[in-house]
Amino acid sequence: FKEGDVASAYRFLKPGFALAVRAEAVTPLIDVSLRNHFFIAAESLRVTGVADYEVKRAGVFAFKLVLPPGLRLDSVTCAGESGDKLAQWNERTENGVRVLDIALKERVNGRVWAQVNLSTNYAQPPRSLPLVGVHPLGVQKLTGYVSINAETGISVKTDTFDGMTEVPAASLLTAFAPVNAPAPVQQLQQPMSQGGVMRTIRNQPFTRSEEHTSELQSRL
Image (cartoon, rainbow, N blue to C red; front, side, top):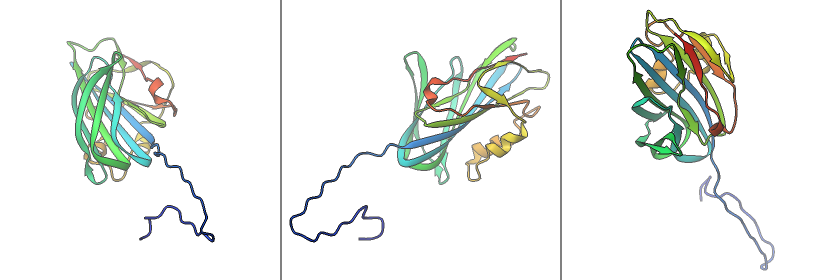
């Protein structure tokens, strides 16, 4: 035997001894730091959602995220500190809700980042634009940020938001800057295109993430 091969050891003093054990699967604990970034252009809305997963206790083979309605799914990437982890992804509808299934190449434990890019086009920006991002399922703790910027010539004013606190844009770089993150996540640490980040809003930490959906209205 070598260290790590034995979970428990016992010594018996009499030949007539009894020992019973109970084995059960360990449930993984998953914490997520989520960022949804919205870029409002004259003819389109682009959404980038990055979920920073921290998987503990037991590994997982897949992730699930809810996708916002009305947006086109452009690309999906998933990577860990050792490289690409994405085997395949599939979009489906469950009880009228868009769900993204991400299958991983192997069981993963520790830090994993999933990035989802979505977009939609319009003739001109609507006066009231609900901003709904991606949302991870099956997690025990979720803390998130919403950041917004716009193309030159478009003014964005926050109309309503609930369950969030507005924070300085600079704090986003500190709160969401994993050292060993793959390139797509590292790029999100930098100002996003023209105009820089105009609004940064932090979701209140919560559990039972399946029941929470963030929506923010922007008046253009």
